[in-house]
Length: 166
Figure: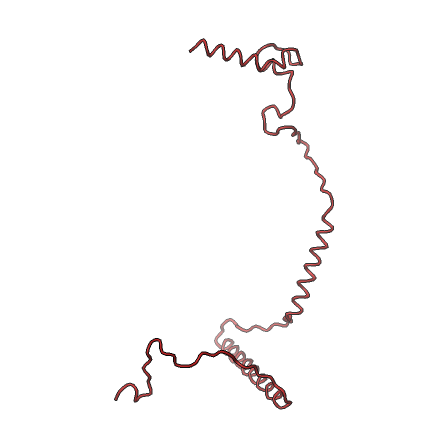
């Protein structure tokens, strides 16, 4: 006895067994009888599902297991209700954005004394009077005639002193 006698078929690679499904016609109930039959089949399936849930819950209660299908009294929202809710949220956010378009006021803390080029040693302010003191020309911290030239004088001194060592 071969494989074919037991109802088995030998399949060959690349050989099509059935034509491909190209279209499935929808079931449209036209008569009252067809509509009622459709409703009853849906009701039967619903009853089978709830019966299976009930038997599962009974089994879990008998064996002291956690209950899988807990009762819920909250209403599940339909797609249209969900869309309405989402649209309402979007409108609320848009209204909040319109309200938020007021000018922002900066309240500086007590120790806030920044200005000019922040992060530099002198704070970025003009300390022209100190140039002559920094570069060692004189000891007067006020603005003097030597202050605008102090950097250049100090540079010239440094160049002369470097040339002597070379």
